Length: 145
Image (tube, rainbow, N blue to C red; front, top):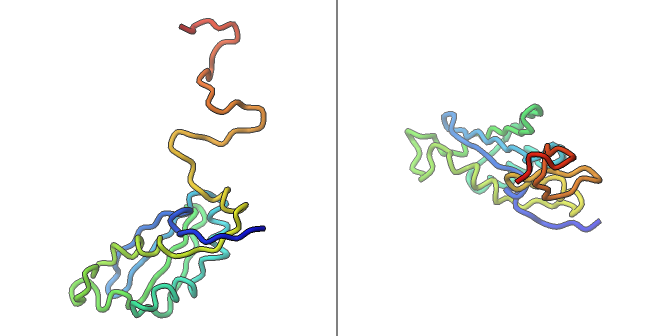
């Protein structure tokens, strides 16, 4: 199977904020398959390595499976926090956006099950016609213009 590198943001979205000098980072997979992949791939150690240039150490990871989410606590990444830090993002609001730029190695076949479906679309079962506009239409055509 062929492996490619993508941005984390292609299979998840993120939210972040501050808790004193630490930042919290929630990574929300777009699909259950994406969550299953991220549970195995996105470890506390990977996140710590990615944020190491910002002084991040001892990242903790918490799983929130009912929301397809991994939550990370990044101690001391905010250099003292909102009231003491001279960093532009002292409240950690951009940490989530930065995390979405992380490179992820993923097999192409796995990626297909992890990406977000376009708004208004749905996955079709075998035998259904994609793009059909005649949902719930009587078989005899009654009620059609």
